[in-house]
Every structure is written in C-alpha cells, then in structure tokens.
Image (cartoon, rainbow, N blue to C red; front, side, top):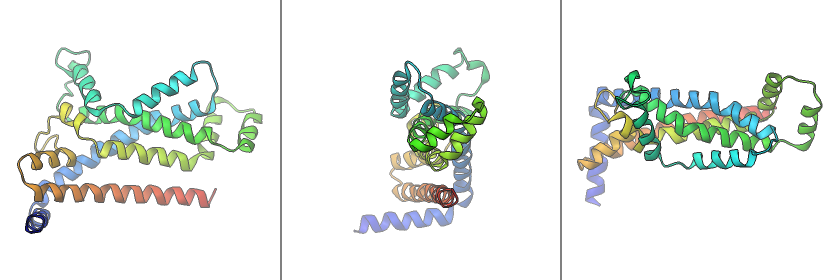
Length: 233
C-alpha cells in the first residue's frame, strides 16, 4: 500500500504545486476538444438526421461506412491527417502540422461518424405517429430537418455527448499530428502518457483525475439538458 499512498501524495503535490502548467494543459484540452465537438456536431448532426429520415438506395452501405468510421483506430486517423498535412502533402501548405489546428482536425474526423451514427439512430427511432405527421406536412428540406431535430432533441444531445467523449479521451491521433509539444500542443491525455513514460505516476494520476473531472462536468451538463428537454417536450 505504500506505493499507492506515495503516488496519491505525489498527485496531491502536483495538483497544488503546478497551477500554471496545469492550467495551460487544461485550457488547451478544452479549446481543442470543444472546438472539435462543435465542428463534428455541425456536420454530423444534420447528416445523421438526414440519414435517419431518408430512405434511398444504398443507405445501408452508407450506414455501414458510418459504423466503420465510429470504430476507426485513432492512430490510423492520425496517420491519414499527418500525410495530408505533411510539408509536401495535399494540405501541407497550410502549415498546420504539430499545431492545435491539426489536433482539432483529427479529432473532428474521429467525432463526425459518432455524431452521424447516434443522431441517425435517434431520428430513425421516432414514433410511427410522429413519423406519419412529419411526412404529411408540406415542408421544405430545411424546415423538415429543423422539425426532425426538434423531435429528436434528446438523441441529438446524446450524439454531442458521445462525440465529446470520443475526442476528449483521445491520445494516439493527437500525438501523431500534434507532437505533444510542451506549452504548445500538450493536452491532458498526451501529458498523462508523458508522465507515465517517465515514471511520474503521481503527476499522471493527477492529470487523469482532472480529465475525469472535465468529462464529468460536461456530461452532467449535457445530461441535465437532455432531461430538461424530455420534461418540456
């Protein structure tokens, strides 16, 4: 038990003794993860609603592709973005490699299928009565999309929560495209890896607790919003 006690004591010392360094890592983690979640939601939620609502030839194949994307290995996504952003790659001229922008890009890529898949499941699960009423209305595509999303509010919030969970806990892809540079591209997950590799387990545990705290706060907020939507539906 002495080892565990020492690690917990070191974790407390780290939390109380490095506010500036920890603050920078937390701020970048929030900035990257929330930005990627917003981008993924803007693309994925309407796309998922459309897939959940529309019947067309090849829909099953498209949904299979979405499901594959939901489980894509992060390191593979990181490698793909790395090749795109490399100096002489198709997007190398943007100069994004080893910057927070590259980290946002790869996290967005990972989160979009999650947002699409969960939203599509929520929309396709609408009650038959609601489905019939929506189909009977003479609405344009944009109006129909707004109504469908409104009727599936709880599911949409779940999709956003799932997308955030995907990106905030990601480590492999952001190391590949971000480089884990201290003060520039180091986020909580990559900092945990760095501290663990150097056998600073107390610091790693402290960072892990902070990461869990962030996830808890965000998900509590989204869960409350989901419950509020259900109560006022």
